[in-house]
Length: 333
Image (cartoon, rainbow, N blue to C red; front, top):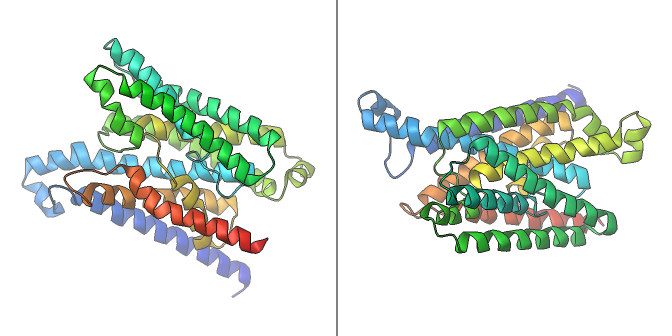
């Protein structure tokens, strides 16, 4: 068996493992909770069917979709900046999206106007693009990886401070509940939410997958990609817009979630043994789904009936991966 065939078998095996992980964790997320449910009991108990269909299944599918989108956004940003610890949360993109969504919700809820899912995504996209603009300006002036990350963190702190100020001084009870969302949470998902996020992220995923070949050349350097006839400026613009759409969709529905976008691409790359976008793109999506399904299950169960912020759990598992990446990078220098 030649080397290329062995690599292909490894890629397929890795994807199968990730798919099985998604299926198993989906079942666990649906069955485990404050009320334990056996699938066989659903035929006899109408109440259990309502719990599964109206509460647990929409949440599980939302975690699957948004977790995958978050990992894919992280992969695009790491590729764009050639920076292994770039991600929507670290670069302040999630915080910018959170800030604008909070402002929009405060304005409309204060007037007793319901905010649609589409409006939330648009507001989050606008905020994400503002933060991304600042990060891009910084990246032109700052060459060092560490300083770029510090700049992103500072932007994130400023946006988070504004958001907390808005939430703290809100009078309406519905607005005050924004505090839970601002910490990151998958609770309260509905099938309508799932339909909207699935549509937006499915289209975005397809567009990212179509960029697999140009991204492969871009990873080898912008000059190399340009010599192959790739419009590098257009490719970079596409990466910015697509990563911002993915980040916006996540923040609009679940708030900012830390470390998934940074850690998952590295774990998936290790599992696959390659950085080829044609494999990394679908595997990152599946890996992000597995990561978030696992963390959301822990967030619900560790201190039940109290639910932890999802970012609290993702940070516990994601932060060590970031430290490992930085140590490995230091060793190679």
